[in-house]
Image (cartoon, rainbow, N blue to C red; front, side, top):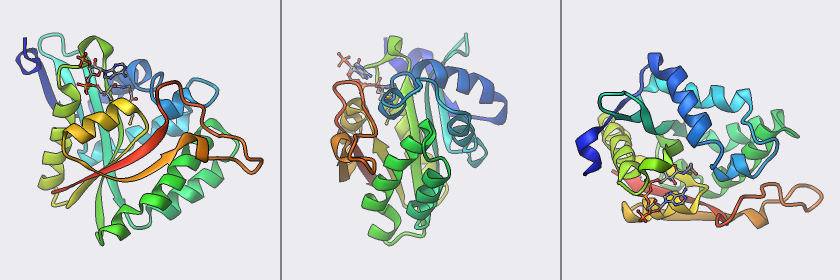
Length: 216
Ligand code: COA
């Protein structure tokens, strides 16, 4: 059966917050390589608060089983502009020596290297922060449908580009299939602390954060 027969994709509203976070805690955070590759395993409150803060932008979508309304997939996105590399670096410093601080430290290095808004001379764009599909329905094109919903919303908002930092090989393959352009790669083994220790220890087979963009 085609995914489209029994699963609908729709925008997330404020009322969905609790159910969305329950889904992310079950199917996003435990597998997402930055979260899985730092300790302790559980995401910090600041991380969860940040993801949910994107809902009012209308840039978050869920895949729902028709009938049961159970969430089986989600994508969380938001705006970013040329100040983002500086903002993330400051946040990484604020949260230094914590799990969220370690995650922000690699995202800050990725932002500095990809520097999307300056690179493409854009006032702003849409950035995908999280993407997950329940393992029971993976491989049925739900990741594609969620990313297509973000691209359509990006056009609707008059934004010129979608950007995504793929921390997982699976999301990177998905972006390649969707025709996204790879603009930056940071290998986990090259993101080190002041003592030269690798900060993120991702599970196999993940090796790098790859930044992809789609110009619209
Ligand atoms: N582990 C093992 N296999 C996976 C997988 C994973 N995390 N993600 C996808 N696959 C497999 C699928 O089952 C499918 O296999 P098949 O060809 O035998 O059917 C194939 O890879 C292609 O899958 P695709 O349709 O691209 O996956 P999807 O859109 O259903 O899911 C993600 C892709 C990224 C949403 C999914 O891997 C996920 O939820 N990961 C956990 C959270 C995460 O790491 N997010 C990315 C952070 S940037």
